[in-house]
Image (cartoon, rainbow, N blue to C red):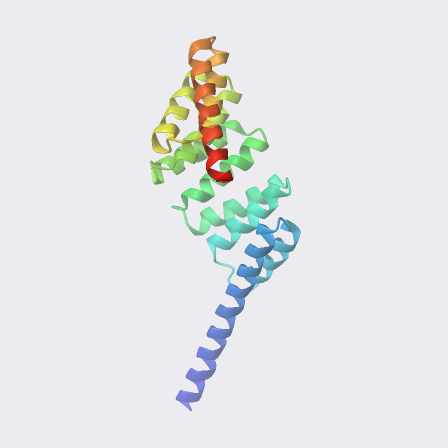
Length: 195
């Protein structure tokens, strides 16, 4: 009898795990095809089977974010962080949602936390720099864009945005230098892609 119960329990666990993975995978596929509403439906099903998955909350939040449903995304990122307080990507994404909601202080705090968790994440510095530019902290933005570039040397957007920040500080030579570097990197990227 014990053996039968163990087999039944194992089978239920296996089936539940497989179904959750299946729904998650289908959600990922739909998100890649930019069917974000369809992805959310699949993530909802996966969460019914596995409600303590920080990763599924993160990805459902990403789908909502891509639909410009920033409040819904924020709720999911909060849940992901509650389930895994060391999930750097969730802090970055929550910061992005807060940025879109014009909650700049909260966004910077989330990028700071992401950087504490993973100081080599170029995107955390990049996004924090963007918020600093929005609030007119151009010097702080330049510092963060520079770190992002050091961590990811071919970071075209960081060069472009650092150039914008330098231009806002009337450093025309620095701005032009950054914009030229971004242009060269983009040209090289196009040439590599076309070959």
